[in-house]
Image 1: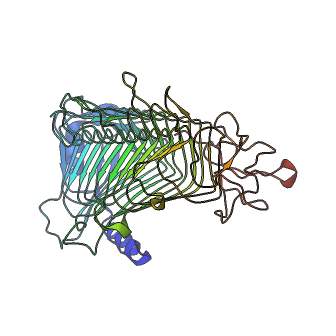
Image 2: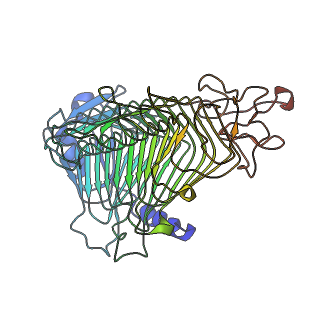
Image 3: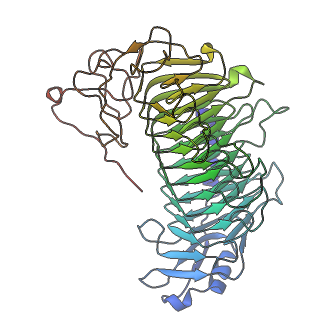
Length: 514
C-alpha cells in the first residue's frame, strides 16, 4: 500500500474516533452492571468505567450490539485493563453491525482499549463479531481469553473475533485459550488485518468431528482474503495481511496452519516479520491425511517473511514449521521472499504413520527466494528433513546464504537435508544426504546445539568460532536476524558471528514473551 493509501485510511479512522459517550458505574463494583453498560453504549462515543479501585467483571446475559462509532476503555495501564466483559460461557459479548451502510458511506469505528473479553460463546466470534464493508475495528492493550465460536459445526469460526469485510487493527494484546472452527482466535474474511506486538497462546481450531476439508484452519489466525475488492474482476485493488513483532506459542489446528493460515486473492499481499513461532501443531484432518504448516501455512500470493524464529513446531504431514503453496493463475504474483529466518527443531511426522515431508520448510509452486536462513535440527518421517520442494523445478526455489544442517529423517529414507530440485549459491549443508543444490559446500557448520538468547528480540542459533559459514556469504542483508550489522565479509545463515573483541558494547533488545 502506498503512503498516501495509509494516510487515507488513518484519516478515516481518526475522523471517526469517539468524542462523547457515557460512564459505567458510580464508583462501586455493584454499580457496574449489564444495564449500566448498555445505557452507556446507547449513544456511541467514548465509554469508560467508574467501578472502584479493584478489577471488576460484568457478566452479560445477552450480546451487546453496536452500530455507531464507539470506544470502550477499561482503564488502567496493565494489559487487559481493570474491566472484564464476560459472556458467561453462553453469549457473544459484542456484535458490531454496520452492514446497513452502503459502500460509499463513512467508515464506522469500534475501538477496544485496556479491556478483557472472556468466556464469550457463539457460532462466529465468541467475543466479538464485526460485519460490514465500512466496519473498522481497533484493539489496543486488551485480552481475549477462553472465548468459543464452536456453537455450530460449520465453516466459520474466530474463537475471539470474527471480522467479515471492513478492516481490523490489533496492537499489544493477548489472545489465550480461544476455540473456533476456523481461526482459534481470529477469523478474518476479505479485509486487511494488522497485528502488532501481540501474543497468541494455546488457541485451538481443532474442534468438531466433521471430515470436511474446510475445517480446522489457523490455530490462532485464519485469513481468507485481504480486501473485498480482490479477486478476478477486481484486479486493481488488493489488501494486506501484516503480522509483526508477535509471539505464537502452543496453538493447534487440524488441516492447515498450526498458528497462522493465510489465503490471498489477486492482488492481495502479506508481510510476516519479527515473530516467534514456538510449539504450534497442525494435526491431520478427521478422515484424511491433510496437515500443512505446523506454524504457518501460506496459500497464494506475495509473502514477505523475515527476521523470525520457528522452533519446536510440528505438522502431521507437510512442513513442520512452514508450508508455502502457490496458485499457478498469476505467476508473477505468486512469490515468496524469506530472509533472516531461524528454522530449528521442527518436525513433519505422524505418530501413527510413516508420513511427513519438509521438516523445516515445504514449498509447492510459485517463486520462492530464500536468503540467509538457518535450517537446522529439523525432522521429517519421509522426505526432506530440512527442506522439501514439491514443484519439481529448481528455478522456483532460489537459495542464497543458507545453512542446512543437522536435519534428520525417519528410518529407511535418504533425503536427509533436502528433497526436490533446489538452486542457488553459496550455501552450506551437513555432510549427510544428497546435495541440496549443485556445488553446495559440505561441512559441519559448527552451530550451537539449540536456540538461545544471543541478543536481539528473538532466540537464534549461534555460529561457533571457526565455523565454515563465517565470511562465506555474498550479497547478504545489511543486518542479521538480531539486527546486528555485518562484520567483514558476511556470514551464511541468520546469525552473524562477531568476535567479542569487536564490540565496545552490546545493546540488544530482550526476548519478550507477552
